[in-house]
Length: 295
Ligand SMILES: NC(=O)c1ccc[n+]([C@@H]2O[C@H](COP(=O)([O-])OP(=O)(O)OC[C@H]3O[C@@H](n4cnc5c(N)ncnc54)[C@H](OP(=O)(O)O)[C@@H]3O)[C@@H](O)[C@H]2O)c1
Image 1 (cartoon, helix red, strand yellow):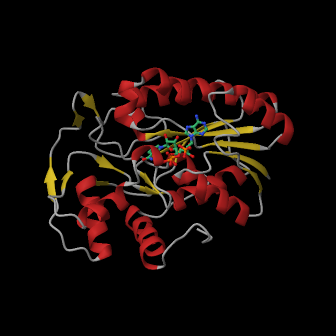
Image 2 (cartoon, rainbow, N blue to C red; image 1 turned 120 degrees about the vertical axis):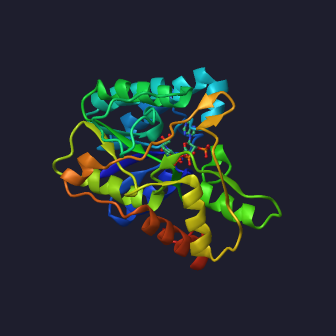
Image 3 (spheres, rainbow, N blue to C red; image 1 turned 30 degrees about the vertical axis):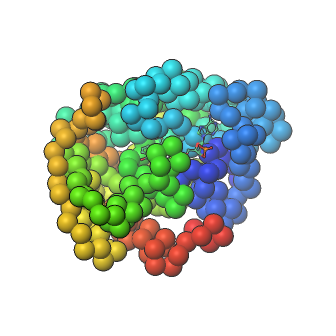
């Protein structure tokens, strides 16, 4: 297949490109200078030139506290740009795949959210992503993939790295390590997500709609940190704290684990979060990942 992948420097985009090439797909992955998703002329030109079968958009504004301060930018990238790309993709008969978040949910449940559960976003980020979901799904051949707590080789540039790498860095500094035990999530290794995305787009029964794709199971960020330290042999005390899901006035869902119900129905299954973390740590910290490694 010919695939346009947007967000080539990102945690997910960078691995998707490597995996898609390894699967034999033809990939076009423009830099941000070549394609800024807030400039639809760029996108239209690329669609005219390459006419890809599939467009995969991993670009977003997803620094959650910053979205509160810059709501217009959040809606521009996470909703309006997504809407235009879905519309143009439909005009070119291409599938359009874009990513959303566990933060579309309010955290009232105590069992993992299914695709059919009713969203209830608590902050601008979740609202802008939910608006982007509705906007994309008003066009044919749009697929929204909701994921959660993503970490990948590159580290999210907009968030200053990723949770796993940042906790390992913290352990080397002489400071108390206090981690929230109030939020339950499904932390997801972008390498596992990338494979699941490729399985989904190649699947003959794929259809327009929402798919949850996360590493199976769930834990709090405190429990996740304990597991990171266990797997890396770091012997540091981790102090659980209860922030009641709040950062200042901004609210986060207390429970936002996801259930991959629609993907599982067509045989797409991701590893458990502990296996995903183990795999990531082996590749990055034991084998020593670098840019030239396959994954
Ligand atoms: N990270 C998480 O914990 C998490 C959780 C749930 C859902 N998600 C969703 O999953 C998706 C992928 O996340 P990620 O962690 O892989 O993101 P990421 O690492 O921050 O990568 C985002 C990519 O988008 C690019 N980008 C940003 N603004 C752009 C623009 N205006 N035009 C073109 N490209 C632009 C970035 O380029 P630069 O390098 O130039 O900035 C980067 O390549 C996003 O939709 C996100 O909302 C993420």
